[in-house]
Image (cartoon, rainbow, N blue to C red; front, side):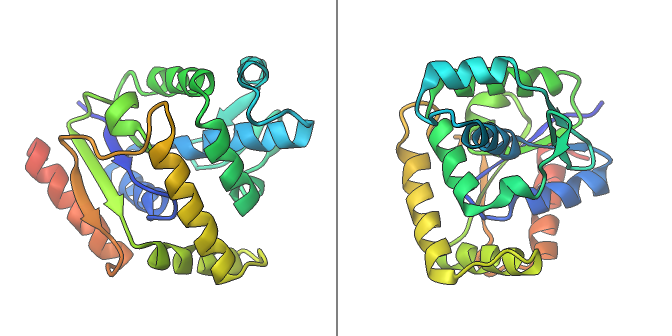
Amino acid sequence: MKFNIAIDGPSAAGKSTIADILAERLGYNHLDTGAMYRAVAYKALRDGTDLEDEEAIVEMIGGMDLVMNADGTVILEGEDVSEAIRTEEISMGASTVSKLQGCREALVAMQQKICEEGGYILDGRDIGTVVLKDAPVKIYMVASPEARAERRLKQNLEKGIESDYETILEDIIKRDYQDTHREHSPLRKADDAVEIDTSYMTIEEVVDAVLEIIREKTGE
């Protein structure tokens, strides 16, 4: 029987990359919960909805046609927004809407329903503490702000997104503060999560470390 795996950590710690690889190795599905918040922010900004208007955001989510495909693509109202939601503006917007309790409750309910039968790897900010409290494997990935800024810069440049290191670093530090100080479901390590500092690790080293933790926790 397949179980669920929770991966939490700050922005640009490598959670989605690792979750993608693990999902392929294990034959699981990867649900990028951060992309769901990004999609909400993207739609709100596109439609001119105030990111801090909780009532308006919750109403918007209620009528939103959002599809999270197994291949990682994000379809919002028939449009593939997989790349469009990865800008720094949307990243900060996602952090803003994620502070709204109503927004979190609506998306958490969606996430929990998707994962009812197991076999999912979820990454985000409150997976181990809120969304999948009973997950047998919980990982908390961290990395220095500088290492994360370098990774994000490299990713953006590879995608043709014009970026500069100092701006990205400033945004990451600002988002870290927002995520750890918000009133509802702040970013924190679950008591039973295993922490991995990925600052100086290769992707393969992180994957191997997580697979070892899975074996230790589940015997599989």
